[in-house]
Length: 117
Image 1 (cartoon, rainbow, N blue to C red):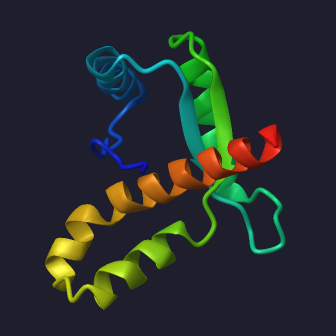
Image 2: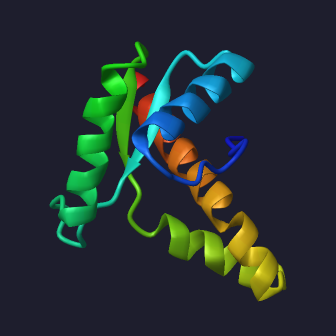
């Protein structure tokens, strides 16, 4: 199963990259999967453009393959799972991004496995 290891709270590009590099080294990351927020119709909106701009900055400092994965509904699905598990609102806020990241990675892995068949 796929699961998030941590949540990086964005501050500025320098600190963001430093934190990402630390995680990459600690977990010996060989590939990065990035959730891209899309509109309901599948197009990339303002938030998606911000993600793409951040990726371009990352590519200048991190030399690893980077793949995009649609992240539509991952937060909603994750929140529903936590509500169904009777997790209190405060705790949900603490873990929702990590759980959604796991959903994004699972979706990516499933898509790749399906393409190999």
